[in-house]
Image (cartoon, rainbow, N blue to C red):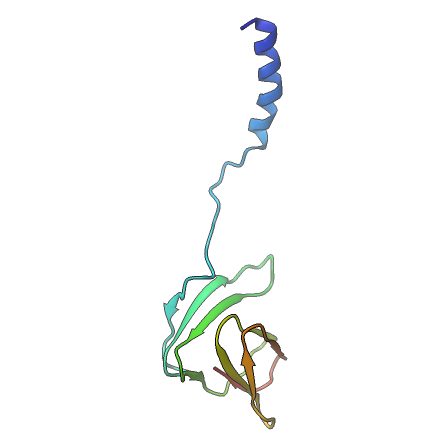
Amino acid sequence: MKIRELFLIVMVFAPLSILAQDAAYSVSSYLSEGRKAPNTHYIGEAWLNAIVHDDTDLGYNITKATFKANSTLDWHKHSSPQVLIIVEGQGYYQERGKEPVILKKGDIIKCERGIEHWHS
């Protein structure tokens, strides 16, 4: 290889090394059930997978909750809105003073901040 060719190769690939990332990626999966939830507000069994948690840049959390059949949450409310996305099976959602609705795979429902509700 001639010096001129070597020089051209170095000039082309050297700048690319500057653009290379020097930190490892943080990869997680929403397919994992996560950790078993404490039964403080649950009737039955549930698992929580904190997909995005305490991320100040985003300003919100994403948690996948997996409920065993016939499991549910007690009445509760949140200090920020909550969005439920049903990815498998079906469940129930009810706000205080309203009728419950059946949620099925593909359904999305938003619960506003401070609204007392329960879901399964």
